[in-house]
Image 1 (tube, rainbow over the protein chains, first blue to last red):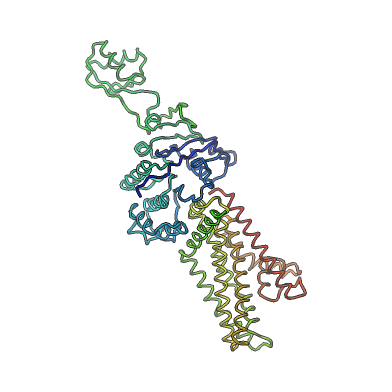
Image 2 (cartoon, rainbow over the protein chains, first blue to last red):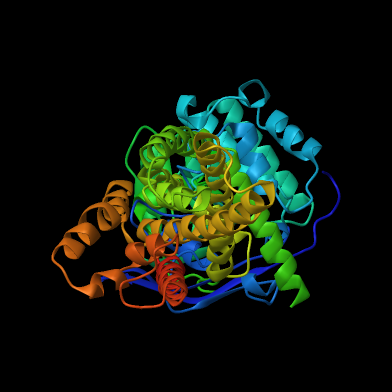
Length: 304
Length: 254
């Protein structure tokens, strides 16, 4: 299916979930916009999966989620609005992959050809007659992804869809998600595989201890507000001293890496010192690096 | 309202498809029929010499003792709920409808319909076996009326048992616990309470269900009122079970 999807923006407000004394999700508000891939990132227990379940009404708690301005139950055909993959297990262990899709299509008027098309798309045509008991983790993930895509819904909600996928599966999923967003669909995903998130996401929300601690375009969240520049020169020691004196933070090592000064500012300092610069590279921080540093600030976009 | 009915229809088809695409459903049904026939044959032979033994009365007696059918329908009903929840398919099912109550209603309709259909098949098989053993009874017209009455009653009983099994599956956290309760109540707890004496034992759900198949309840002097009263009690228990299961299905985190 290649035609445009009805644009549906998903808006969650004040989602909260407590398990006894533990607050799994605390006043989480977020928006997943049509045409974008929005990803919740965070460690185990950060509250990503619970947030997705709260949004879909599969877990109960204060707060509300609107799909295109209406609750999910306000849509006449919910299966055409949201397709979900919420981790394993996703299918009955004794029902074949083909039957699994047939069962979920029952009563919706979905043609058989669509089920076969999806099985082929996710590379399960040869295993369609097998039950998930004999599936590898990656195959089960592929079946779960096919399930979410079954009715070509506008909104895809996926919880850790990358887990267990082989490299081909990762590329396939990335392609599917990007294509879905390009068609005007909304993708909301939770993942802790940050390198892959950085490749596929437009917007990320970082969760820690049940709260969103940072949110925004993936490049902004990864970079934060600290610039880094790698510089090589014919007098690294003198240049490093001067850069530190001008307010930069210099990393010790085989190369001079300066934090807090732009590449232009570093070049200006070198010119003032009459030092020959042989390399000047603005460094891009990966989302994973940023995550390791846990240097989140209350950036714009949090909770919006 | 029309949209809601269409959605419920679609969801019921989805639930029926879930049941019919599992071998376990066919095994349970097949086993129930396969075990019912020889047990009925034994009952019919034992009763064939008794005065006043008719096709109708012997078939009803055979159905009242059809424990394999009870076990099979309970396994089917408990499994239909627990397997769904444990495999994550219930989450997907609830996302297809507007609210979980609709999903539970559709599942209840599907499971009790399959159980009722199985009940009709078993009743017809037993009627045929008894008619063969007793030598045809009072003619084909009489047999037809008996078939309608007995088939309808046993369909109701099987649907009720299925409802009670579904409730156990929804209210208890594991298949083992749900099966233990669903089978323990009719096969152990209720007989033990009945053995303790007291006419109130006829008020119990499964005793009421069996009483609708004939004989009525000792609580009522008139046998017809006894059957009707038992049916009301049994259906009330089944409806209460579905409502309790629905409450759990609606409030549980998935």
